[in-house]
Amino acid sequence: MAARVSETWVLVCLGALLARWVAAGLEAVVIGEVHEDITLHCGNISGQRGLVTWYRNDSEPVFLLSSNSSLPPAKPRFSLENASSLHIEALSLQDEGNYTCWEVLNKTRWFRVWLQVASGPDQVEVNISTTGVLPNGTLYVAKGSHVDFTCSSSSRPPPLVEWWFQAPDSRAEPFGNNLTVSSFTLLLMSQNLQGNYTCVATNNLSRRHRKVTTELLVYYPPPSALQCWAEISPGSFMLQLTCLWDGGYPDPNFLWTEEPGGVIVGTSNLGVEMLNRSQLSDGRKFKCVGRHIVGPESGASCMVQIKSPSILSEPMKTCLVGGNVTLTCQVTGAYPLAKILWLRNLTQPEMIVQPSSHHLISVTGQSSTLTIRNCSQDLDEGYYVCRAENPVGVREVDIWLSVKEPLNIVGIVGTIVSLLLLGLAIISGLMLYYSPVFCWKLGNTFRGQDMGDVMVLVESEEEMEEEEDAAEEEEEVEEEANEREELPKEIPTHGHIHRVTALVNGNVDWMDNGLQALQDDSSEQQSDVTQEEDRPV
Image (tube, rainbow, N blue to C red):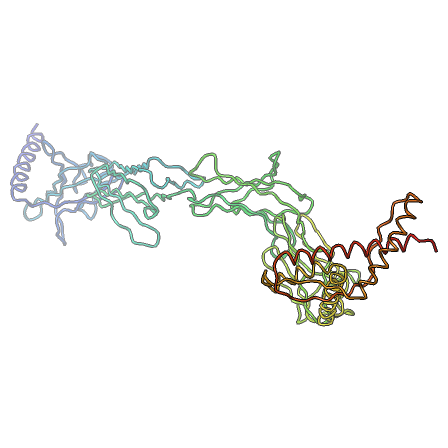
């Protein structure tokens, strides 16, 4: 009973001393973490130590342990180090509080220690909305979308949560902070917002922190239209199908199929497929479908149709010895574009015509020309072959080149002119011979004679005598004609009439009489000739 009273008296005295100590503010602060060990020192004194007793200050002091071996510790987790320090194993949140060390040596001393127990941050939860996940766990969002960022953590005391952003090849920069939970929203995501987003939760008591870094990619589909084409593979003669959908991130995936039927030719993210000759035929179609991870869902497509070449050319060309000639070869309908060659079919296999000073070869698009300079019959005359070839087919056309000696153009022109002049002279002579009246009228037209000047025809005496003889012969002919009752045949006049022309000044009546006499004379001559022809020999 006396021992219990003594212990009670000691605790009362200790409580009074602790109250005075707290009022004086003499205390040490020690921070520990849950599940860790910690040691609380009894003052900062070196040398011999006296009897040390540790108490915990709750509503009333609670005995923990003493250097007096006869007093066991309150819990096995409590032990005495260096005969004065309190060692606590496996801290828990319940261990937080005020601890007092009471030492009795030559005099009694008290030391107060404030133990703070920190916990966490145990875990950090990050949530980024409207994202997709790649097979490796990387997040991605579509360009132009709205993205919400949230980070939370739990600890004691509550943690400080903050966001950091680091773009590729740049330094990290803060995006804001808050207690326990931190969140923000990015509007209209762009390419420069692609990078690493880090959430850091820090326990301000223990300064322990935990962070979670999330890589966020910003994807966008190609803005351009899908393009596809067929071409001859460099370094070989295989057909290469190429599909291009440029400008997006990341690169799209491509699928080549044969149409119709949808037979798969190949898939890749390069869009290039090689076809051998067994897969080729004139008019065959191939379709390319491009798909991007952020859409459109149906993708984009285009189609190519391969065709063998056709050739247009002149079948024959002529060149003069020593001159130049150009052979033309036009290729149409070839897809992919055809390779054009010129050959001479003098040997088997045919010899390819190589460019030289004698043979000039020019290629523009799908048109080729072969110019032969200084033509020679021995070297250049013969067949030339234009060959157009692509992986789908080969076409050839033969062109015959004829080399001839040059013609004497001056002699030919002179001969033609001479013949024209001779023909004109003959026609003029015949007109003068057979139609003097026409010539007379034509002459008056060109000379422009005055109507007062009249041309009068005067017959000579010789002509008068011939006319009398002709009249007698005409009467005889008429009598014979009556007897035979046959119609007389028209015989062209072949006689020569000699006339003398004179210009006299008279009136129009005189001119009419002269013309009438001319007409009568012509009629009489015709009659005379007819009678002479009808007479029997």
